[in-house]
Image (tube, rainbow, N blue to C red):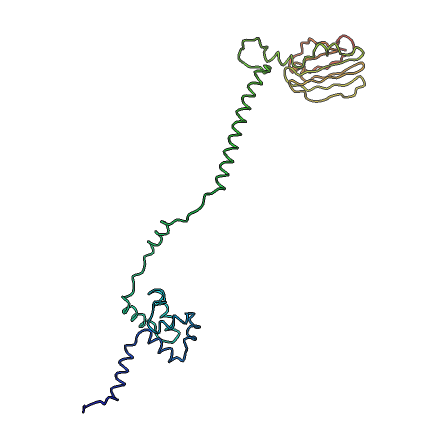
Length: 279
């Protein structure tokens, strides 16, 4: 016969000792039952699937998918059944090899750099580059061809005065300017005999001129630039005013007027039918 506590007295002591060493899952299950909640209630409140809640209460943490997710589920379930999650997580770490060291951020970023996103070829950029190359080639060809054509045209025409002396006799720039407005022999011969015809040409510069017929009607009043010419015709008389007579060459009734007009001189002239004569 034993002295001291009876077996019945020892049972509560053994139950208390057993409860003090409850597993994580068992502690959560008893807390849930004490709170008057079912597994469905906890699952709906925490969004944790029923199968995972059952597995955790049975201390099977494999369905959680790893220690990180297991700790998260333990913390969530503990808050739902109104117990402190910290001791349970500490107990879980002690039973499963301790809390793992956090993963440094730098290797993750380095891994992202090592695995750049694979992209397909940029066909748009390639097409733009090809178009630019074609346009550049066409433009270069056109400019080159235009330059050669201009040289050939100049060589063929031979009418542009140059400062250098060529093998063939070329009149000076002054003579070319004089000869440009000079009428042909057919034009001189075609001048009507019953009218007065006056051609005014600005050969040595520009000059303001004014021309009127025998009735005083204004035929022209303006600036005649170098190389330009005007022809006036009337039945009996043409009245002229030359602002710079030295720059003007006159042809009257098909004949060139040999004058000695001075540069800058203003001349008032009148010509009639027949042989050129100043009225």
